[in-house]
Length: 379
Image 1 (tube, rainbow, N blue to C red):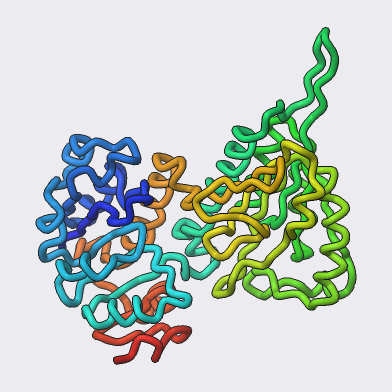
Image 2 (image 1 turned 180 degrees about the horizontal axis):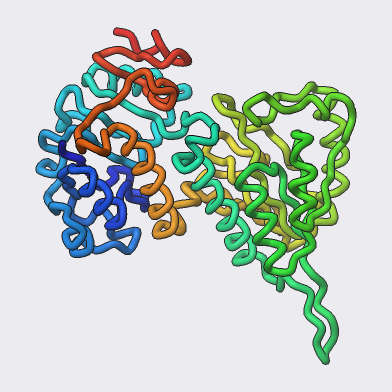
């Protein structure tokens, strides 16, 4: 059984799908591991460390030649798939929503493609949850990026020359990324408030020492799916919430938005009028910019300016701290892929009826098989 770890084709992707730690673990399962030369460079992992862990370091084509399992961060493109053998298993963040042609390409290449972001949020799969591991780091980095672009101190400082007031930070969306942003901003000494449409978020926000801001009516009390995601809200509720948020934003120094709904464009939370109401030197960080953004005026991959207010729209925010992001992502992958092996015999023994496999497999035997996407990649 050969496991391959190619370098990422996307030049903006700094993460890598395996680390020396996980290479050793895969070797312990009886697998042969091949890593493309330079694959871990942006994550501060030299080739020598992979070799010391037992991996073969090779060029791009040799790395994936006859590989049974291919581990990646992002979905492979057409040129990459040409080098994969039919029937190979590819595990990555596949970004399947709205990418029907990409699903068809995976099916046509006869690959068994697994989307890590579709991992069910159940106890057994917590250690495999890439959305949580990467969002956690994105929330942290959002605060660091905001502080870097905010030309004042975040904590209150009592000095002989006078007092420097604490920065006011408002976090919109209290999922994994939002909660980490709250915790990080609090550690840096900011006065933090937060909002979310999910009732359960209020207690979580307050447990971190932040104040919760929301219109808490009957619709708010029903605004969460069984899986723990936010439901789309009515136009009436959105208007009431927007009015409350508009008044609150006027007083904030930093706003961090994290709101995403799976399979849908990011909801617009901050209008141009709200941005214009903020004080000169204020900063917004839009973590949803890759899905269209929560902030009007945000530009993907850029720091946009609206008057004297900055709107940060960096792409691949977890990749901005690639060493940490790769370490967590590689463990997520290992924890999932090890379920494909019989630990006693060290033999490959994937159970296609396993709930984790059924929830994440997109394509198999030349067809799109995931129930949410079946038929979309058909020839």
